Figure 1: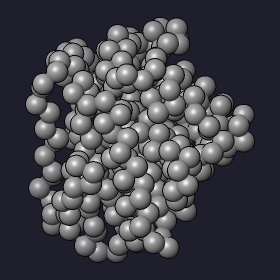
Figure 2 (figure 1 turned 180 degrees about the horizontal axis):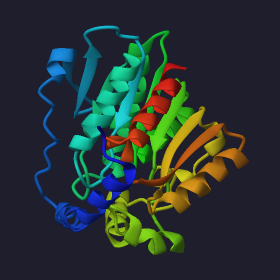
Figure 3 (figure 1 turned 90 degrees about the horizontal axis):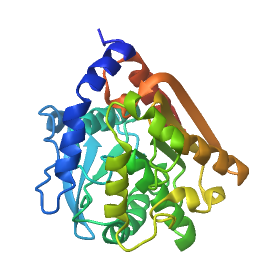
Figure 4 (figure 1 turned 45 degrees about the vertical axis):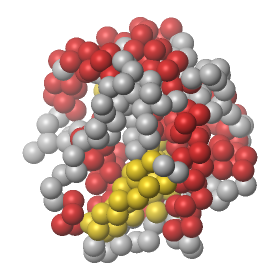
Length: 292
């Protein structure tokens, strides 16, 4: 049986010092950053296509059985500093199993060696390629944390460029404002299982490169939020990004957008990757929105 959310939270909080140190180490330039290995059962259940788009690797998981034709791009988080993690595999596979969708997993170059300006041609190319593969089927963009930021940036750019818009956006705890400047985030830091505000400040500055932190391509909360398609936000209360996420949701609604907020009491950053009932419920909700 899955652990309770509280048990998972306490275990994750106990491991926070190691996560914080790993992030500090990864913020040093020139560090090798290999994505987490693919679980061994994945090639048995999916045809795994290894592609290169705009010079970056992309894995596409095609279900061997009961494929729906839906195309989903999943941008991973990690404060734009860490590569694809095992928790991301649990989320991606949970979505694929629930929807029969083809899952596209882009592997962008994390900071500090990569910046947003390096990633923009990549996400623009994906915004062309994935809808082409979808054809008349649904096209979804998803991601968590920094990956939620990238999902929003890609969609804002699609609106500007006249590219096909996603039918729905599904994001968990999107890092919408890379300034992470709300005083409430500082107050919440001890309860967050992964992040410190100082680490986020450095990672955000690294990722922005020569752009200002308030540029919508860096912090999508400053973009045209009314141009976004219907949006589902999964969010926990034990997450220092919560204040900015709530401000983002209010901004979408104020600009006439359609946004659904699923706020889970006691849930933590990247909780959909945990083996707890609340994570399964979050993936169920995400799958419902993907299926339409």
